[in-house]
Image 1 (tube, rainbow, N blue to C red):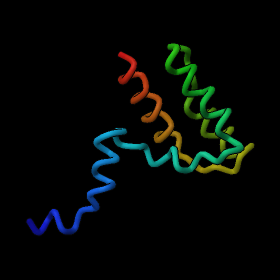
Image 2: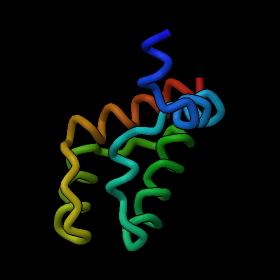
Image 3: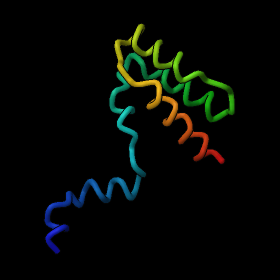
Length: 83
């Protein structure tokens, strides 16, 4: 019962409805959204995307710092969801 008092029920319900959101998605700015969505679409289509290049391009062009491993894990989760 004490655990339930400390939990934010609304956030738990949101997660149950929408699934867990990757923290890197909150770092994607509106300016970078088109590039990021394009990368995700290509991953869903089975086209190879190099995480280290996405990491570098996000940093160089949009000043977004997301680690290469975070990008790789996100893309792998997309691949796993498509299967």
